[in-house]
Image (tube, rainbow, N blue to C red; front, side, top):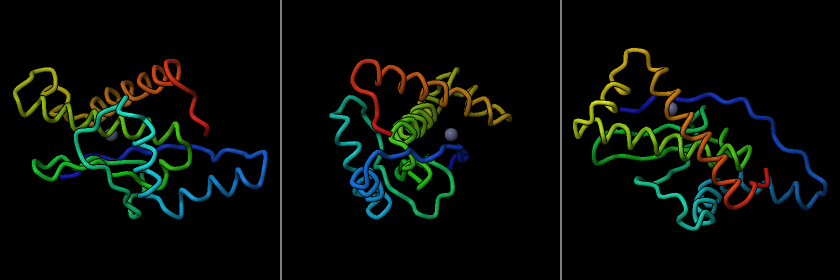
Length: 146
Ligand SMILES: [Zn+2]
């Protein structure tokens, strides 16, 4: 089972120099390597509970595979447009996984979120957390380049 996708509208950054533009373009040529390196650059400040895989067929920024034993955070090309979007997407999908796990353990609040017929309830919740994490991360450590 794959959780609903999240659409984003993000415009690509502008560049001061050609080198900067070319450096940015590399992420689209080696997306899995870029995502892996991006996660490594977070230096463990953010822990992920499932493998993170780039999926070129994914039209949204990300999705979470929530089947037990197959849990995966999938990243789509849309998330690569900005580093801040990639960060937020990673947190968003990780939060889906944590929520589902808690619900499976019987946590009532988590159960309410994941069983709400209005899928938007869970979406709003994990997205709000993702936005908050991004804000906290950028104020505690560094602003993302793009
Ligand atoms: Zn979502």
